[in-house]
Image 1 (cartoon, rainbow, N blue to C red):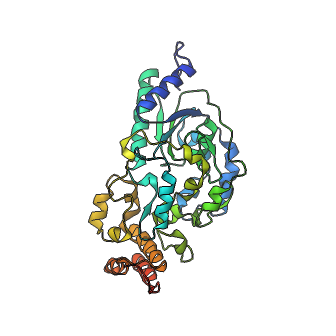
Image 2: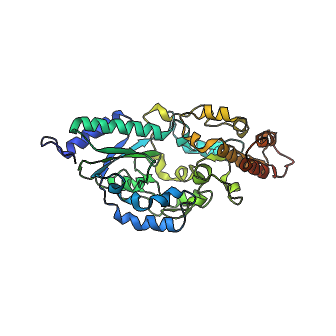
Image 3: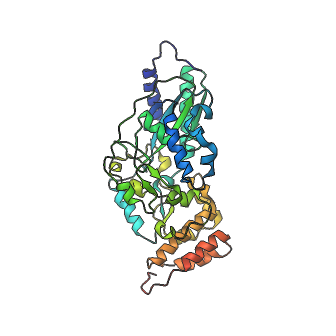
Length: 368
């Protein structure tokens, strides 16, 4: 256990920590305690309902998510961090731009957070630097950093420490930053006083529930991952259920709809780092263009990107669904030909989705 020197007060240390964090590109730093026992019943009920889908690791880790000191023995406090991720050139009214992209059936739509560098790498490296800076100040420090990479109740910790409140879409919300940010944590064996939580400000608003294209937000503060577009296009490795395919529209990696609809995101802030600027091809590309990538091109384009983790097979599967939806909307523009090429030599999973896409009736007035 690390103790502070007598001439270093916890509030003063926290302010210095916030200054170091700002230099590293973080937007906010807070501190949470380690007693999350009140969150255990909700976690168990969510798992018992099967809402985690095929994310078997969620059940395998069980209550370790709500017991930080079991995950990292010796943990006394958790430093929580927020990092805004909107690209630096994001202009006011960006939500309208995203909605218009969703309305263009021939365009491939990727979640905003995935258009730049892999956030896991960015946050993990910078959290580690922050922990090392803290250790240089207070002496040897037992610590471990996390960002969406281990059994950690990130939104719970964020809410308890005052980084925001839990919105009805289950994401963390901040009055001055909306929800367009990543979360990270540093588990430390240093006793720090927890920062104060903030009150919730969703009120009677149901914009996120109403906007969800698949009805995955089954009730306020409850998401059934099995229906969530982000789960289906990223985590799910099998066939996408046929009844859900039309609801995916042109979303090929993740979904931002609940965030686009949230009134608080008019306050979302651009990132401080260039890492989250959109890479070429990741915003506004057509489905035909992306269907034209072979695996080597996919790997080259997604190097250092979170998108690479789904692999080429799921990438093609998702594109096939989006292309099928475009064809059903009367848009062709070379999609049938591109799908036929994609199906040649593809895996059984991809071929099945291509066949579904090509089963769309030929529209007399289809765009070409």
